[in-house]
Length: 274
Image (cartoon, rainbow, N blue to C red; front, side, top):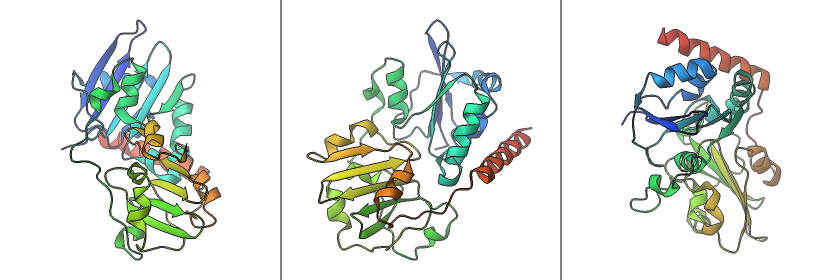
């Protein structure tokens, strides 16, 4: 399958060029840290292609608007999608793209197309309904990983579950998520890093959620939770910590160390590429 990504360059005239990279999604955020000139040179070495990847198979995308000086991106994998490196990576991007507006595409390629005035529906793909991650048992080997691929779900201030962050974000299930988790293995307190999360307050019928990657139809989640107040925290996982009553306590983030680690990762990637 590769790790496919779309790149778009919008010229000052407003016309744009679409590029396809079959192996450019993983580490794309590190490549963008080369700054505007090197990134443009890298993108223009790719083949111009009219193939828009859909929101199931597009693993990363970036748009460079030369006229408005806007950089838009999202990725499924890389330091920008890791809790302890997220803020550091975005801060470094804003530093090396000084004078540019840097935006994250929470709705993936559909949001990118919307920016261009194109129909987002052309990259929507739903085959066979939702693909939900399995509920994770306490002691599962995935939890021993430095950056486990999990989404944390807290219900009120007394229940905490972990779900494999594979396929659709658990928020996509709507209130049916509560029924699926009821009676499932609880974790008491989630102390690991997560890639996504949901907090549900059944009494007040309020729900908040966040993601470090992208989730198809991210801005349409209120439709999946009719009668509920829905808050989209984007990447602000701290909001989840605040409302979860101590049930979500991820490791603290050392911002200076994270910045240094990301800089090292950029240098190693450049060295590997020669």
